[in-house]
Image (tube, rainbow, N blue to C red; front, side, top):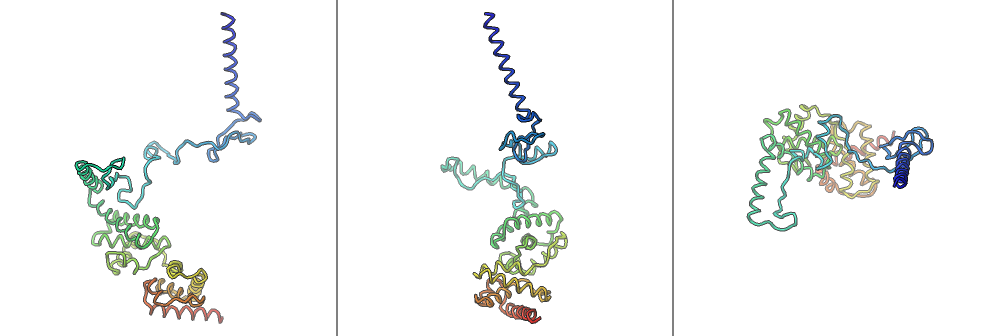
Length: 324
């Protein structure tokens, strides 16, 4: 009996010593016995003394974000869609789908359909509880509709939504229509992002007149102190050339014509859209990819008379530089 106990005790002590030695190896470098440290940026465990990489490709089980206080930590989460300014509630509310089907794809009974319709109605009422939220919802819907029609990217829509929110917060809407301010916000956002659309193009998809858009745009830019540079004619060239099916060589030649016009000061006081359209037309002739003035006029939404006038000015400036 005592002999069996002594054998068990010896084995138990041996197991403990092995465990301690394993733990010691985990805490210290197997080469030099130095202290180990975790490099979370590279997912490695390294020795601080000799630099030996003991473990690599470790999984970081922590969150992707940083929180500096308990309140900020509670507000952040791994779940849910990202917030966006393109929705009046920033995408934080619940949306009930329009399909009358359950989780298995089966159609709901008539009684359940009535119940879901009532829930949708009340959900919509709760999402827009006051006039300000209803205003914002209508305006952001208009911005999204016009941006889709103009082929503008999401970053422009996001910026336009932020501009409209600022205008609403600073009480710039009294006396002006929701459509006018939302259109002006989109026009300003497109110019800020370097993907401008002409005022005629904006007016074609808007529900307000061109004069009201221009007037409201100037007012919003002035009151919100937006920093918007004058539109560069070159920013219109890629779109016009693509719509006309012109080559890269024609596009480069059009840019060259506009650079010459800028150096000669011809662009001052003239419509950037008209200059861009004229440059594209002139470049197409110079590289023998002829398109008609009517084609360019339709793509750029500008008159053929303007194209002819600017076209001659661009070529004269080019000839003047060549002679000098």
